[in-house]
Length: 226
Length: 182
Image 1 (cartoon, helix red, strand yellow):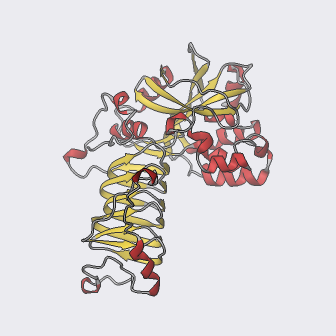
Image 2 (cartoon, helix red, strand yellow):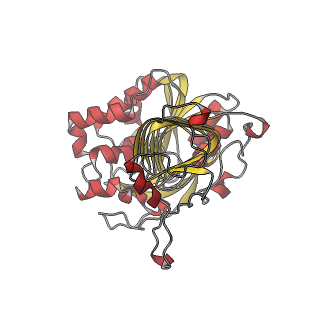
Image 3 (tube, one colour):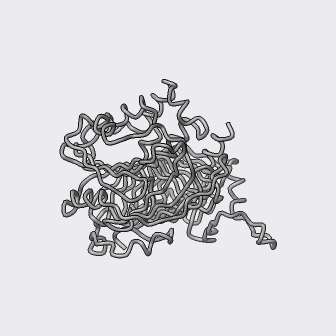
C-alpha cells in the first residue's frame, strides 16, 4: 500500500532525476550516478528513420524535453508513454511482479497502455522497460508491439546482462544525440527475469531479425526488425 | 450559458465568468501572497493578469462548451470543450480539465485529459498531467510532468521547420528547452 502511494506520488520513481531522494525508497540503496553512454543500437535505430520525416515513433521513456526535441526536430510524430511508471501505477512498486499474475490487473494494464491500432508505428524505443515484466505479460507485450509496428520497422530495447543481479537500476533515458544517451537514475526495481541471447531470440521469434550490440557495461542492447 | 457563440453574448470584462452562486468562490483564486514567502508552496504559478483574462475558480465546475475571446485561466473543473483560438488558456495547479482544448497557447500546471491543440505553444509544467494527443508548433515539457499521448509538431511557417538539434546534451539539464520550431 505504501509502495503504491509512493508510486502515485511519483516518489519511488522520482529519484534524483526529478529532484527526489538519492536513495531508492524502500530499498535504502544508493542510486548509481548519472551517466552518458554511447549507444550503437540507438545509432542504428536513428539511421533507419533519418531522412524520412513524418514517421510515427513510440517512446516508452515518458515525455521529456530531450527526446521530444530530438525526435520532433527530425520531423517525426512522437507517441510518448512512461511505461515503467504505468507498470507501477497498475501493479504497485512493491508488488510489481506478483501482481502481474492477476488477470484483471493485466487486462486493465493492456487496455490502458498497449491498446494501439495495428501497424501504427514506424519504430519503437522501448529502452529497458521489458525487464520488469513477468514472463507471461512480457510475451503479450512483445506480441502487442509486433502488431503495433509496421513491417520492416525497428524496435530498440535494453536488457541488463548481469545474471546474478536481483535488483537493477531504473533509468530515465534521455537522447543526447544520435549515438549518446543520458541515463538518469530513478530508483531500483526487481528484475523480472534474466535474458541471454538465446532467450531474446526466442522472445522475439515473430520478428524478422534480432541484432545484439556488445557493450562494456552490464546493459545488452538489441535492435529488432519487425 | 457556455453554449452561446454569438459575439454579443460574451462578457467583455468578466473576471468571474459563471454568474451562478457557485461562481462566488472563484473570486478567491487570486490569492494575496503572505509576507512569509519562505513558507510558500513549491509550485510556481504565475498569478493571472488582473485584466483581460477570465478565471474559472477552483470551486467551480463547468460541463459544456467554453468559447473564450480573452485569455482564460482554469483552476476549477471543466468537462466538455474549451476554445480560445487567439488567446492563452492556463490550467492552474488545481485545474482538472476533461476536455479538448484549442488555443493559441496552452499552459498546463494541473491536469488535462483530452486532446489539445495550440497554434503557437504548449507549456507543460512540473507536476502537470496531460493525457491526450498534442498538436502544436512548439512544446515545452518540464521534468516531472506526466504526459501520455502523441505529439505532432505542426509546421505553420518557416520558423517551425524541422532542424537538427546540434547540442541537446547541453539542454538536458535544462527543463525548459523548447522543442522544434523555436
